[in-house]
Length: 121
Image 1 (cartoon, rainbow, N blue to C red):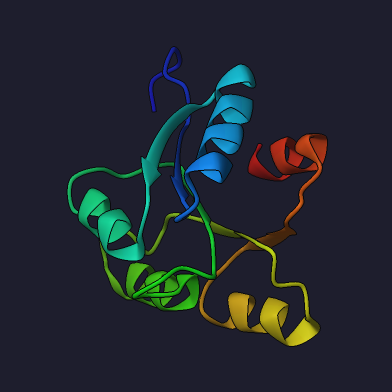
Image 2: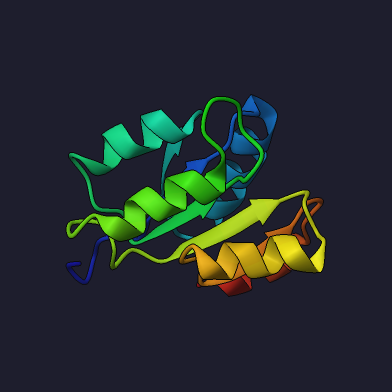
C-alpha cells in the first residue's frame, strides 16, 4: 500500500442497513470500503481485488461466513487477508469456530463504534 492510500476494508453482510452503518463509520475513520451482500459476491470480489481486511458476517443465506472464511484461507491469493467476524452470534462455541476457520477477531452486534474501529485499525 502506498503512503497516501487508505486501507481497503471489504464488508460482507446480507443486511443493507448494516453495510451502510459500517461503511459510513469506516469511511469517517479513514478507510476505503468495498461491500458484498453475500459470500459468493465476496469470493468473486477477491478474485480481482485484495483488501487489507475483511469484516465478515456469519449468518447469511446460501453460504455462511464460516464457509466463506474457509474458502478465503484455502486460496493462496487471499489467505493472508485478516478476517474479523462481525455477527450477532455470541456463544463461546461460535467464537471458537470463527477462530478455527481462520478468523483473527470477533465483534458482536450490536457493536460499539469505537471498539470496531480499534479492532479494524
